[in-house]
Length: 181
Length: 113
Image 1 (tube, one colour):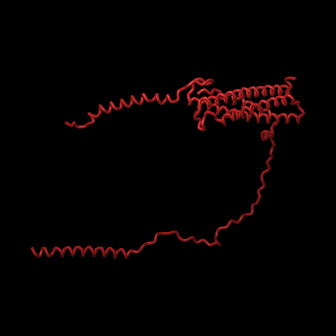
Image 2: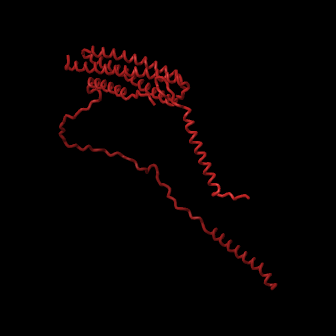
C-alpha cells in the first residue's frame, strides 16, 4: 500500500540526516587540527609547524630592520667624518670625535659581519621551502635559533655602539663649548 | 434577390476605386508641396583686406608722482643650510642618532608566535 510522499512525511528523516551530518563534521574538525600539533623543540618550547613559520617570518622582519640600522649607522659615521673635517678646518681639537668615530666604525664592521652571517642562514633556508613552509622541524628550528642568536647579539652591540658614540659626542660638545675642560 | 447578390461585387469594386482615387489625390497633393529649405546662417562676408587689425597706439608716458621710498630693513631669509653650517651639522648628527635609537627601541625582538 504505497503512501504519498509529502513534506510532512519527509521532514522527520531530513532533520535526522542533518543532525547526523552535523555531528559527523563536528567530530571530524579536531582531526584536521591534529595534523599540526605543537611538539616540543629544544630552545623554542612546544611549537607547531605553523608557529615555526610565524617565528621565521618574525626573524626575517627583525633582520630587515637591523639591516636598515646598520645602513643608517654607516651614514651616521660618514656624517661624523664631515663634522670632524668641518672643525679641523677651524683648527679645533677633534681628537675626542676621531677616537669615538674609530670605535663606532669598528662596531659597525662587526655588526655588518654578523649581518652577512645571518643573511647566509636565510639564504640556506634550512628546514623551510621558498614559501616559508616547514619541511624539517629540527632544521627549521635550528635556523630560527641561530638567526635569533645572531640578531640579538648584533642588536645589543649596535645599541651599545650608539650609546657610546652619543656619550662621547656630547662630552666633546660640552668640552668644546667650554663647559668642561 | 438575384439582383442583390450581383450588386455586391460592384459595390466592393466601387469602394476600392474610391480608395484608390483618394490615395492618388493625396500623392498628387504631396508632389505639389515643395521642400522648404531650412534656414541657415548667411555665409560670412569677410574679406582679408577688411579684417580688423590692431594698430598700436603710441603710448605717452605719464610722469609718475614722486614717491619717497623709505627703505626698511626687511628680514632676509637665507637658504637652508647655509644659514649656519655648524648648527646644521650638529643638529643633523643629533637627529641621526635619535633616529637610530628609535629604530632599535622599536624593533620587535620577541619572535614567539
